[in-house]
Image: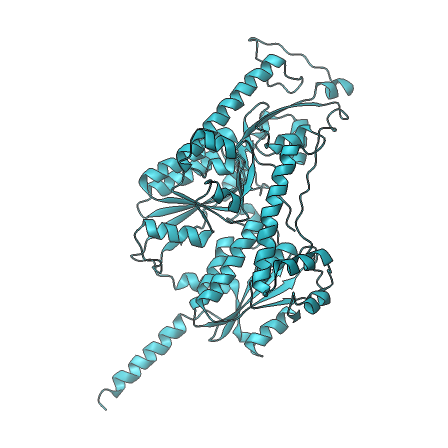
Length: 568
C-alpha cells in the first residue's frame, strides 16, 4: 500500500499528459474532415498584402500531412473527404487519391468521400473513387464526362488586326508556337495530344474501376451516359447514396458535434506535437509558375505565381549552405518560360547536388523549362498524369508596324549597327535576322539536350528522339527514361530517407513554409515590374490576354509547353 500514492501520481501524470497532446475541440473517436476542393496552392502566396484581406490557405502538402497523420492517430476514428469543384490538375488529383489509398493501407479506419460539385466531376470523382464510400450532394451536378483537349490558334488573327508574327521552333512537336502562328492543328500535335489523351484516359478509367470494383468498360459506359443527375450514379453503383456533409459526418461520429475535427486545427495539433530534436531536416523548395529571368514581380497587387531565377537561385543556395538542412525536395509545377532563367535554376540545382541529396517531385506539369530545371536532380519522380518533357525551344516576334500605320501613328528609327533594330516591335524581321535568331534557338536546344543527357544518363541522340518539343505523361516519360519513378511527395520522401541511410519508418522534419517578402517590399515593389518595363502598352495587353508568360523580349529563346489536356 505504501506505493499507492506514487501509482496515483503516475496515473494523474499520464492523464494530464494525454490531455496536453489533445488538440482543442478534438476527442477520442473524432472524425477528421479534409477539404480537397477549390484552389489548393502548392506554396504560400508570394504577396503578403493579400493576407490582409483573406485567410491563408492550406497547401497541398498540408492536406497530405493531415491524411498521413490521421492514419496512425488514435484520436481519429474516421475521415470524411469533401470534394467540391477542383481547381488543380490531374497529377495533383493523383497525389490526393494516393494519399487516401495510403490512409486505407495504414489503418482500418473508414474514409468516406462527399462530392459537392456543380460544374466539374472528372477529377473530383476520380479522387472520391479511392474512398470506402462515395456520397453525392443531393443537388450536385456530376459531370463525369471524360477527357478532352481544346486548343485555339491565332494564325488568322494577326492580319485582321494589322499585326504580324514570326515564329521559329525546334522542333515539330513544339506546338505552343503553332498556337501563335497556325490556323489549325498540325499532324505532329494531333499525334501528341491523342497520345496524351490515351495515356490519361487509361489511368482515369483504370483507377475508378479498381476503386469501385467494376470493369474499365463499365466505367466508360458511365462516362458515355453522362447522367449528371446524382440519382442516376447511385442507381448505377457509381455512388453509394445521396447525403449532405453533416449527415455523412453523423454516420461516423454520431450526434456529438465535438467529435468533428477541423483540418486547420488538426494540422496545428500535428505541428505542436512534432519533435524536431535529433531528427533529419528536409527542405521543400517550390518551383511553381512560369519561369522568368530576374526577380519576382513585387507589385502589391500581383498574386500570379512565377519561378523567378534570382529568387530560385537564392532559395536553393540557402538550403545548400544551411548546416541544419540534410536534403532537399524540389517540387516543380511549371510549363516553362525563359530558357536563360531555366538554365540558371538548373545550375543552382546542380550546385545543391554537390553538397546534399536533392530529389525532384513533379506536380501537374514539369515540361519544357519545367523539365529543364528538374533533369539534373539525383532522382526525378512524376505522377502518372504529370505532363512533362517538351524538350524544345521556340521564339516569337510580334510586329505592330501595320497597326501603327493604320491608326496614324508615325515612327522613326535611328541606328548604329546593322542589327541594332532586330528586336524592334515596329517591323517584321528580315530573312538574315531570322537566320540569326534560328541559330540562337538551335544553340539553346543543343544546350537543353546536353543538360538532359548529362542528368538522365542518355545519349544526346536519344534525348533528341524523345524530345523535339513533345509532351509526355509521367507514365510515358518513365518508359522513356525521362523520369525515374512514378509517385509524389511520399515517394520522394522515401527516396530522401534512403539516401540519408534512414529506416523507411523513421521520421524527418519537413521545412516547407515559404518566407514571404516583407510588407514594405510589396508596397515599394521588389524588382517592380522589371520585365514589363521592356514592353509597350500594346504588347503588355497582348501578352496578358494570351497568358504568354516568359515572352518578354522579342526574339528570346523560350522553353514553353503547349496547352494541357483538359480534365474538368
